[in-house]
Amino acid sequence: MNKKDKETLKRKLEENKKSLEENLKKFAKKDTLPEGDWDTVFPNVEGSSMEEKADEVEEYSSLIKIEEALEVKLKNIDDALKRIEDGSYGNCEKCNGEISYKKLSIIPETRTCKKCS
Ligand SMILES: [Zn+2]
Image 1 (spheres, rainbow, N blue to C red):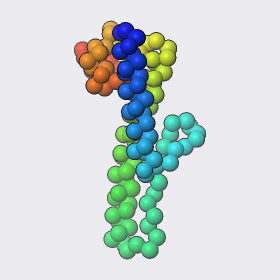
Image 2: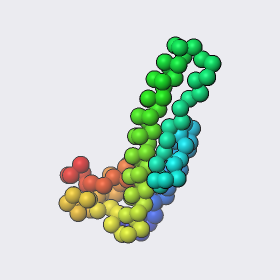
Image 3: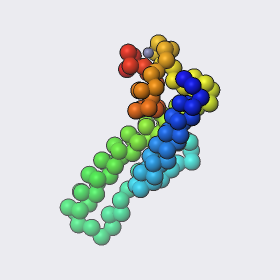
C-alpha cells in the first residue's frame, strides 16, 4: 500500500473513532481504567412509575448491547491505528497477504483479507 492510501485510511479511522466516541458519550462514560473501557450510564428512574421503570431497564439493557458493540468497534479502530504505526497495517492476520484497498476503504479496521474473512 502506498503512503497516500495509508494516510487516507488513517484519517478515515480517526474520523470513525471520533464519531464512535461522540456516540458513546451520549449514554456512557469513559473509564480511565482499563483504558478504552466504557460504562453505560443507568438512566435516571427516580419518580417514574413501575411501567416506566420497566421501560428504563429494557432501554438500559439494549444500551449496554449497543455500548458493547461500539466498544468492540472502537477497540478494532485503535488496533488498526496501532498497526499503522508499527507498519503491519493492511496485512491479513491469517494468511499475511495484502488486504485490498477496496476492502480497507469500506472497513478500514478490518484484520483479514477477502479470502480469510
Ligand atoms: Zn488472508
